[in-house]
Picture (cartoon, rainbow, N blue to C red):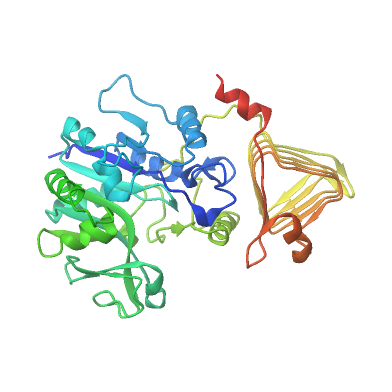
Length: 417
C-alpha cells in the first residue's frame, strides 16, 4: 500500500550561533554553496523522494526565507496533494505564543494534519546540510510496522556529549534516550560508535495526534519532540531508529558514505562550505539523478577576463556561481556567489563570498565570509591580521572573519513586486 504522506519542515529557528549571518535572516535562509540556501537541502530531499505535500513552518526573521520560497519553490495548482506552503506561527496556544518547541510547532498546526488525513507525518528540520533518500526511511518505517521512526547517524563515542544519543537493541528498537551524556551506551556490535539523533522523524498519524494533544495540556512541558514526546513513548509504542549510513542516493556510487553536517556555528558552516571544493567532494552537487533544487535565477554565465601577467581572471579549486565576473582577480579554494565581482589584482583565498559582493583592486581576502552586497574598497586586507580584523568585523575563535552585508536596492525592489 502506498502510504499517504504529509511533510512538515521546521524552519523557524533563530540560528543565534550563526550570528551575524542570521542577523537579518532565519538560519534556513542562509546561503550555501554559491547559489543555494540551507532550506534547499531538505526540500530537495523530500521532492526527490516523492514527497510532494509539504508545509514549511516559519517564524523568526522570515522575510528572506519567504522570498526564497516564492522565487523557487511554489508548486501546486494542478494536483491537490502537490504543494509547498509556508506557514507562519499561528498563535493557537493558550497564551497566543510563538512556537514554544518543535512539538508545539506541529501542535499549533494540527488542523492541517486532520484536514489531510495522511497515513504518516514526516517531520524534518531545515538547518542541516545533507542528502537523504527519505523514501528508504519511509519503507523502513513500514517494514518494521513502526509507529515512530527516528533518523539517526553513527558518530564516534567521544562525541556523545555533543548529541542526543539513542539507545537501541539489536533490532534497532529504541529503548532509551541520553541527552549529551559522555557515557551514553554504544551501538550494538559497534563499541566505538553511538547513535545520534538527527532530529528527523516519521510518525504514524494517530500516534502523533494523540501525543500532541496530551503534550499540549502539560503545563510544565517544554513541548519538544526530543525532550518530551519521544522519551515519553519509551515502552508505550513501537519506536525504531533508522540508520542514516545505510541510506543510498540514486546515481551515487555504491558504498559512498552518507553526508550530514550540522552547520550550527560559523566554524561548522565554513568547514562544510570548504568541503565542496575538493576534486571528489563528500557532498556531490553534480548528481543529476538527485538534483539540489533552488530558485530559478536568470543569471548570465560566470565570466573570467584578461590574460596578462598579474592581471588574469582565474579560479582554482573553487565554485563560481552564475553572473560572477573575475576581472583580473585570483580566487583559490573558495565558494563564490552569484553576481560577485573580483577586480584586477584582487586575491581571494579559502573564503565564502555571498551574492553581489564587489572586491576592489588589489584587495586581499583570506579565511573570510562576506555576506551579501558587501563592497570591499581597493587595497583592503582582511584575514591577515586578527587583531586589526576584530576592530572592524566579527572574528571567530578559529580566526574566520565575517563581514556583515546590507540590503541592496535590488533586494528592496524585489520585495515590492
